Length: 260
Image (cartoon, rainbow, N blue to C red):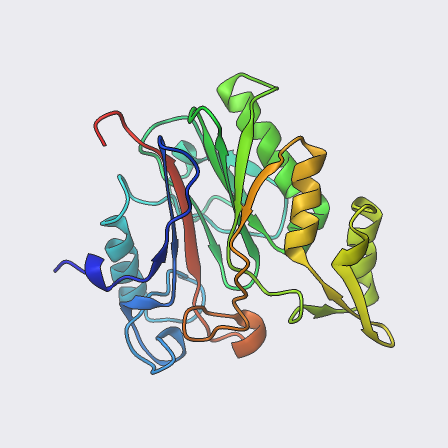
């Protein structure tokens, strides 16, 4: 059965030799909280969110119809480790970013409020996918991924393009002082990325801090989709909005083979 026409997808443009997709909420077979807002046909790709395992497998199969090979599913741990995507055989691998220089290998991260960042060498020689939750972001996962990408292509001056995907919006991410302080200590230039909203409460912009992280490693060509997962329940799952029982999106990027 061909589900391609039913899928809701974002298609970032990161160069003519690069393919990239971000899955939205609809177009799969999950139901209940892992479905759409109507409770049906959800495209949840998360295998550890209590969804029916057979539904998750089918959803991943549907997505693989849109990519040159099976996406490299791994387990994310809110850290800063970067791995080579071609070495990710299954979800026993724990990391928060993947990089590859091999055409057709699909770097993949899962998100449901955390910020997905897709990276591509401007010459199309290498790509990376990053899962940037607040801990990973404040720990330097974006900088690590850019460094790993440049090392992989053998060019420490390589120009890198970045795409910031759907994530919890500035107005929706209320935190305590420890989160705000962690970001302000690492990225002091981003003075407008934290906004106090009450005693001991702050709003934090993941995207603003991600842009500072990218700037710190010389990445200035950044496209921000500007979409909030929390604010749009029709299109996106959200852990902050819906709690433990919600789905995950996939952010994927690959180098196109010459025959594609």
